[in-house]
Length: 185
Image (cartoon, rainbow, N blue to C red; front, side):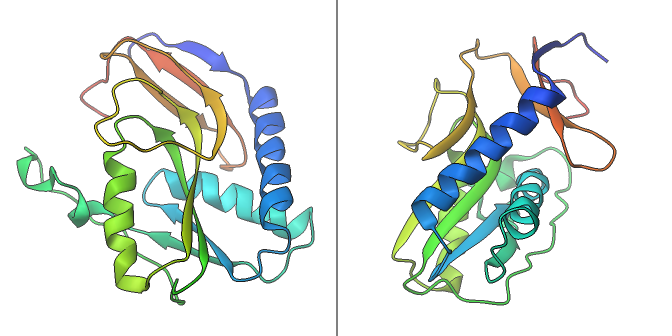
């Protein structure tokens, strides 16, 4: 495994996640006519954590929540050298005229979010879409997409790879930056 540098520890990650939850409550209040959708695969770990905090710690009991697989909506899925494994989309509601909050772990080129917005159209036409991304890698966007809620902004060289490394219970993460993406990622 290549050597990485820790950008944010487990303790600071927890503080940032709770700050994001407070911002969501401030803007969505009771989540009436709103839903949260985590993007498969890595965004769902973060969205599960945020959803559980909102339910257990803030007492919001009626949030519609789902997971969205964007594998075959990506514009580069045919260019892959390995077989793609689709995840399961779990949404038992439509998004017609709702405020949608998409959650993903890292925003880099914007291609995943673009694919998510395409996939989301199969579930209706939302009144608005907002994005929560824990890491915003501001540079090198391929699409004009920006996060409404951000845990940490990271400015790094093109080859660098930023990753959330989750603890065993997927309840907290450290954020690391690596000089390049390994073949295993």
